[in-house]
Amino acid sequence: MSVSKPITRLTVPEIIARKGSQKIVVLTAYTTPIAELLDPHVDILLVGDTVGMVLHGLPSTIGVTLEMMAMHGQAVMRGSSRALVVVDMPFGTYEGSPVDAHRSAVRLMQETGCQAVKLESSKQIAENIQYLTDRGIPVMGHVGLRPQSVHIEGGFKAKGRIDSEREKVLEEARATEQAGAFAIVAEGVSSDLADEITREIHIPIIGIGASPNCDGQVLVIDDMLGLFDWTPKFVRRYANLRETVSRAAQAFADDVRSGRFPDQTETYRFKIKA
Ligand code: KIV
Image 1 (cartoon, rainbow, N blue to C red):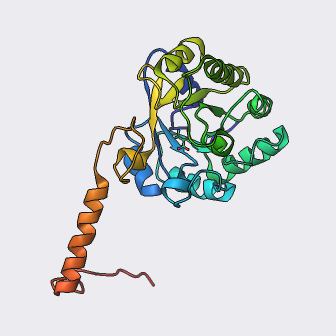
Image 2: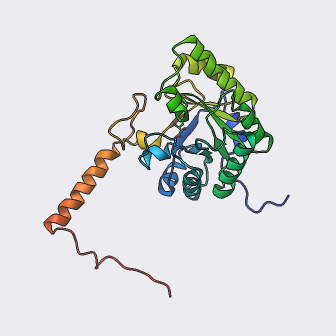
């Protein structure tokens, strides 16, 4: 096989090899400039379907489409060169049958150039995951609090307080691993349950609202940058961009209204090539 360009991004086998040795750093990204800023610092850029909530103002991830994921996936690929890029498969695009799942995953990979897809996994979805992994598509699973099940669950509910719930999450993780997934996001699970999953499952477990002992951690970028006035309790804010943006907008409005806004014609130079 002739190869035109060497792969410079982290690869799926490299991520798997981190289990038990080096922690995996994951942040969500949805746009080119944010991907550019995050790329040097993270191992995986996750184009999560949270994009529907954080960028498009949807009440849940249910309304997110394949088109939206492809568009944001392309943007993140353009802004990164180092991190492994994983794109989420939205609600309704992979659950129906293995063939549906395959069609959707192929479209995302071909249109974006991403290296892997993520889907919310369960025992029932394991057959679809297996169909993808048997055909060369790397899959990241997602167990515990699965946001696409918001309506059947009656809300976004953490898992692991009762035994039957714990067993179900463990089964989800086992089925996902057996189907050939290369990593699993464990969201909103009690720390002892997350620890148990991390010990028992042989592929990397990436926690969110789980346990610091997971093989890696993921956060939603807009939450960790402090862009919202409300974030889940477990989220540590590493910046307060909400205040910064609000202050900047206020300063601009003051300049415009008071006539202090500078004449930009002196400094604004277009170079237009004929
Ligand atoms: O969609 C997303 O951003 C996610 C993270 C919360 C892990 O799945």
